[in-house]
Image: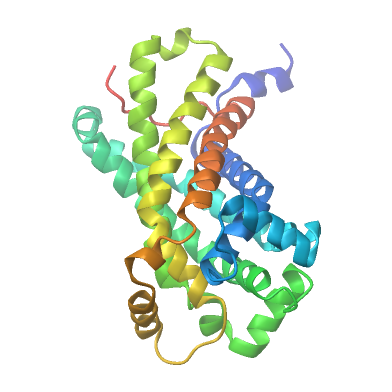
Length: 309
């Protein structure tokens, strides 16, 4: 065996392992969110202009294409891909790191008995740091989608927001709602995925005996259920995020959020839920499938597992 083959055969550990987790997470989130940009454009339009786009998802697609051309459906692709590439690295890499940290701290038996709590806390901490990276690019994406003439792309939109609104008001006005949206979403996403995939694996047999295609199918199915659940949990904050990033406003971020929530009401907070369930359910299914396959390709199979055998 050559030295290169020997190195390839050695499973990565420590920083090298978590770097692979982060890369796999970055790719799976960047690719899936980027591919679903047209759905996100329509969902955002429904949230921001409900009196115009009020005939459902299919009709909204046709309205956007008729008024602005098919190219409008890819508005915001740049910040979407870049933002979720960064977010995916922190989210998946951080989740694996914190999960392993809690297992080492508590011990395997205690961790297994409290695995739902570990999934929830690990994903919540990871998502907080992921949102610090995501928020400026998400603010840029929403401004580009809601105001098509605002700028021609990521660099132009980012620069104009920074110049006109400043760092905090321009990029982090939506930090509160993005935390309210993303942290419950991510916690629901990971805990439901872990528990559903655990149930599937119990029914299918030992993981080590299953083919790669079977494991990918389990990841897809578990991810779909997890994504649909997470979409419902996080929908109100997603609507507030779209509204607060649409334009500059006066007053504190908290007062603006409270005012918007009062204006919208319960019904208004769930505008765009249908297309968002489609988008989030689909992208989450493919995220977990891609993440699992990329981890395998990178030799990063050393993630901590606490599902009871």
